[in-house]
Image 1 (tube, helix red, strand yellow):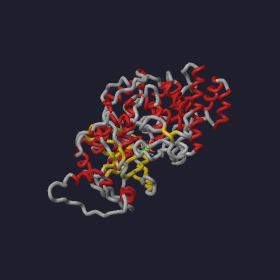
Image 2: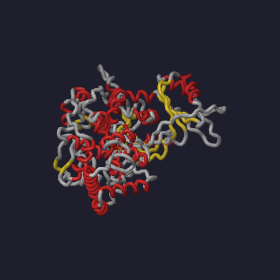
Image 3: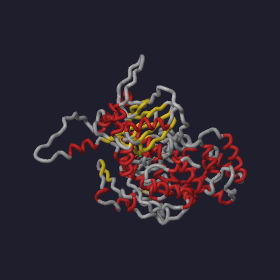
Image 4: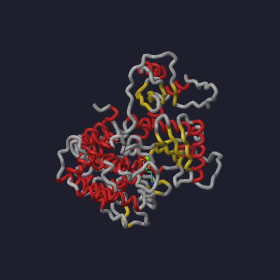
Length: 552
Ligand code: CTP
Ligand code: MG
């Protein structure tokens, strides 16, 4: 039996998630039949944020009685949800029904006395539980927050029934779990408490793959400090003859303001933020950020400010991910394939990013006949007055209610789409064309970067400007090779059972491609021999984690 937490992935109603699970287990091929009402991105964000504000994080002794622990905490009010996890110690995430319970617990908590060192007093929602007398410990079920090893994953893929089943299995194994999503929102909420010490009423929102439905277990936590709500509050009080303004300090530009704000938050995190370590200030980047590690949750965090457009692009990806069940399955497999072949990396550089790969998949799905995904321009035509959104002069309007978008009539299988994806990009005219999900068709490249993917909202920006010609070539070579392998398998496919790597599993093996020359050698061998060699290499690479945690 699969642990229950694997049943539910990130945002959406439980009913919708269960439905998605049914689909991904192979009973339904496309998402077009899913009539379950889907939640708006803003509704999911609000619900998760409210939950996080009623939640506390507790470092526990390893030997603990779960029942007594919960009984002790219910003194402060009813608990609606809790789970344990391990990360250099045992932690509990406890969600109270009411916010007041958190204050009650804080009021009953003391600041530790430290012996030779001195504690900086800070009343956060991150606690440490001590036990005076030994308890009768009970065995505690800990939720899993890291992806399965590549060996385990390859095994699961080898035993799948079809390539479609393989893609759905990969999605199920790698997607964020309900608990991991809760922990991400809680971490943002804990950081918000620290930032609020300076900027009362600010909000720290997660964005990127933590919320756009394409997040893989272990992905970084992108968050941004939103000060807009503070501005709105003062604007609502400007009626009548009088106008009251705050006395403020002025700085030369928005960028300088962002740098100064992030700089003080970095100081706070560094000096007073419980669990925050390795704080780096990367304030001269195009998008200034503070990078740190939130040790207790295990997340690598990137905190930016003034980044509403990125939140909007997360919302757009969330919509694309929810429109059809094939989208996420394909994106996860392509990302995993790219990671296995070092096309993406944990270190920033001239490689393709996961964000660019997601855009490529979306574009490819817009190009199918009939299209599986609508263009951004079409989503804009469905928008009503309330959806209107202009950020820094950029039109970010699109329909936010998913239920207004008609499902696609396309019934292509994931197997076909995977193969066609590799063929499409293996033969794409990257030298002259740009990828554009706004219009859903190729455009002439406006500049000479090897790979040009237009930012959907800041249309003058190329989201893959960093990608070098050699990295693009590597992507093209691997795409062609993968298309070839899938086509070969079609011709003399071994029955898809047992431990032989086939289909998606064969594409994920790191040893498949070692440059074109090796690929050519592989090509000459009969498929049965090739698969035998792959099996050998899976054994020898058994301990290596080819799908290891992605970091930016
Ligand atoms: N982003 C952007 N333009 C870029 C890079 C990033 O607009 N050139 C925005 C996107 O909204 C992206 C978010 O910043 O989703 C976070 O970037 P990143 O962490 O690189 O990508 P993720 O989508 O979060 O993917 P990963 O799982 O690799 O972190
Ligand atoms: Mg990210």
